[in-house]
Picture 1 (cartoon, one colour):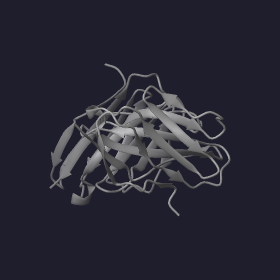
Picture 2 (picture 1 turned 60 degrees about the horizontal axis):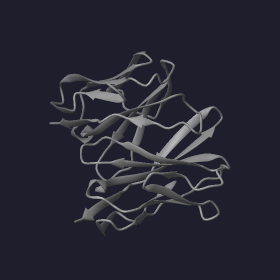
Picture 3 (picture 1 turned 45 degrees about the horizontal axis):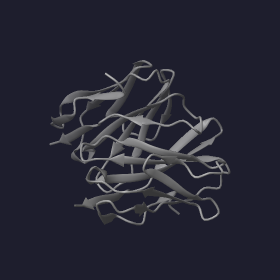
Picture 4 (picture 1 turned 60 degrees about the vertical axis):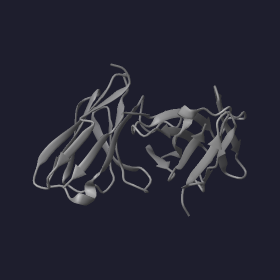
Length: 116
Length: 115
């Protein structure tokens, strides 16, 4: 099974609407971290939001929030009031740490296009 | 300069050339990473340095050779590359390595084309 699954290769959303980008993950570890990154066409991977597996509340950063459902192993990104500048690739990632080693696994990404 | 910078931003090279990619982080971090991003594939971790020591090498071909002279600089030396090595090469840094809550911050990447 894939570690990180993003089932939406592409999404088109009207400007000012909210959008949810799906992410499911697979791990047997009890302690792990989940991240969302945005990658515009320029290439830079921009950190958006982090959720720890033991965090009881969903993470929020401005217009970004993470809908964390631990039992379902999902960590969906919600962008409220979308803007044209939100058009980009979005990657979900999971970090596992074990035996003094770490592994950060990325999904294949979702290309979000905001329509004026 | 702030954050993580990478040079050059674009590079075209022949299979017999030797070139180097440079990464610099201005965040005071102790860990630095090289990733490869190919079209329609997830990011692939290539190398990890923690406190200037290599701690991870994910079965990367020897035609890629990393170097970390200090905690702020990371290089990727390239020689006799293949066309399939064409990709976006991303550098990242984090405060420490193997700490679960640490966030990796990425540079803008170098788009490499091997002819």
